[in-house]
Image 1 (cartoon, one colour):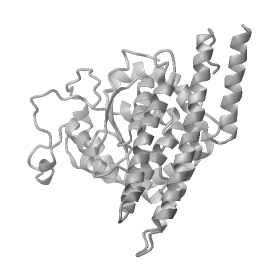
Image 2 (tube, helix red, strand yellow; image 1 turned 180 degrees about the vertical axis):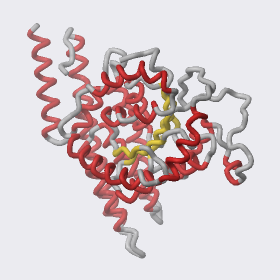
Image 3 (cartoon, each protein chain N blue to C red; image 1 turned 90 degrees about the horizontal axis):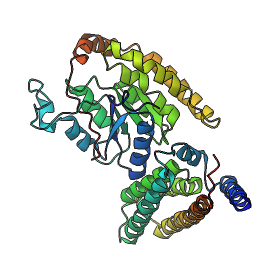
Image 4 (spheres, one colour; image 1 turned 120 degrees about the vertical axis):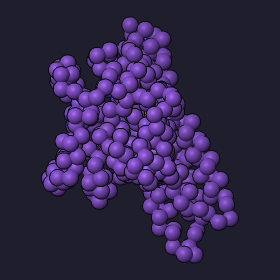
Length: 221
Length: 156
């Protein structure tokens, strides 16, 4: 398990449940990501530097040039069922923000509701994990996170990626995974027809290579 | 090394029984997998958080059910939390009674039908299963502690 070379990927985890925050933090750290956990969608947006008022006027930049440091976030993983702002609401806000829409978002939920899953994927979520989230799920984050980094950094990661995929998976997960994969495959087929989103990705990808602040801090709010 | 071997056997047998009796499920194994030299107390930490949080939720639930007019959405929200955390640590029997409780709460969102005494029974079941698993886990941790103190290591 690498330490310093992997510390560049930063994941923001959002969950109102204390135990789940502890668990997701450990899962992500085990996979060598830097982690920040917050307990609400509003706090997540604050952390990301988004102010609610900006959303209404597209001409005003959504992210204030802050006096405090901005930390780059490479992936957001959020619970679906949260009081106030749900994970879905948060997903929408992120996708509506010109500065944040390219950050991959993953949704977690304890409930297996196909319509919920497809709604999230259609709104732009990369993955939908059923809780309790396990190491096998976290391993699936890597390809999404790697899309946000410039290509020449991918070589270092390849080795570690293979190493992590070799981690043992448990028999009893098979059923759950098969079900998830079936749904996911079906939904991916629908999803891949969404040309609008693809165009967005292609159009904006050069911007992602522009270096941003990365002070390597891990913070827990 | 007899003492160590004995304690190890005790630990394995006890853990097996917890799985067989449904107190714990696969998710508990997952937690143990996340424990290593850099995080040697992870399982105890998460479970301790679970105990604290559960006690808070049980108090909230008792309060909510004491109200003249029960806010079932509030009750449901608390049970949902409890269901979530018990599922996350692998406390299977607690999770199951939470699910039953929630189903019951959903049924009760019918105008004029609010038999709170049955909700109270649901709460009692959750309380019971919770105290059972708490007891079991505390025993488990005690054996582990004894094993380590005797110079042994926890079998993986």
